[in-house]
Length: 88
Image (cartoon, rainbow, N blue to C red; front, side):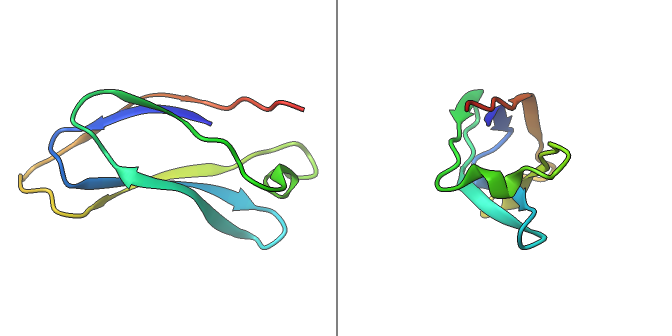
């Protein structure tokens, strides 16, 4: 999974979650502080990736952003790119 994003101010945390079709819940696969400049992240699934692929080949993800100390109001985020790449 690749994502390019940034926050307008420091103090925001970005989390990437994948839907686990075995447990029917989202699993956190990455969590880190956002930067105030465009940063591209490349996230690799550890372990068995098959649990994140439905029987029809669907993959579900979500990107969450939490205020963990932003000292500005209002603040914003930008997500410029998200890309899935499956290698078998």
